Length: 343
Image (cartoon, one colour):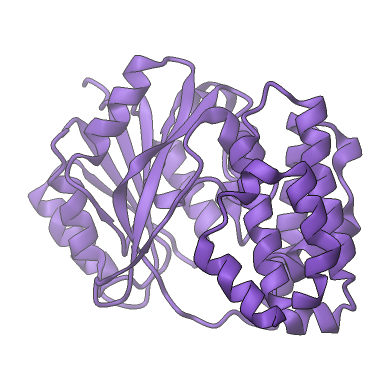
């Protein structure tokens, strides 16, 4: 029996409300050469029944049933163990693929055989399917690699991956991570080749407004720090790693005032240190496409200044002196809003 070109792997947990639409969006792809592996992670609703009914109609669907809830990483690894395709496409049980998604991603793989990871921007939708926002992810390999220092550069359900690192080198999701498993994987997968994001959104990703418990927030922070340290050590130099700085970046640059007060963060020091990191990277890693990363940092520092207007005079000079071009990318309405707060 000929192996399929693509193995689609979907992990499902209590997605009965949305899973039929998700399955339909995969089955209606313009490129039809795929197997569809769905891992039901011990759902307590009718998800398994819906999957089985679809499997009766389409033999490409293969259902794996977990006897107990194992979590996302372990469920996806079960799918990887079963996968036979040359490429692996991720999908979640509540998201929707555009009909030409697989065809578009495959076109990039065929043009550049050094690629191991192709994602895309996504349209985030709410529970009712209405558009909330569209992502603006880094597009090129170099921009992705620098972006990965601070943020996850891919939307997980949008990615298609080359199967050879998984089939030939045993690459798998790290099951120690119960959050941000995908970001952790990218750091290792990108050692095998290049990545890119397609500018056009190829997936509608459903956003759930569940509140995260304090325990899970702390675990997510610890996982993020582990990922960042490992990534910097693998792709840059471990001397760039500063756990206190990166912890405080999460509290201030990507956090809020209450976290800053709770952890007594010196926001000015964090902003200047983060801008210093950009300067360091530009000096020592000129082959990286750091303009996108620099704009990301400058915009985040500017947004922090919006929350802490008293920092404006102490940080604005550095922004204009060392990061003038990146500062030009700040939206004019944002500048006006900041000056209104200062007056």
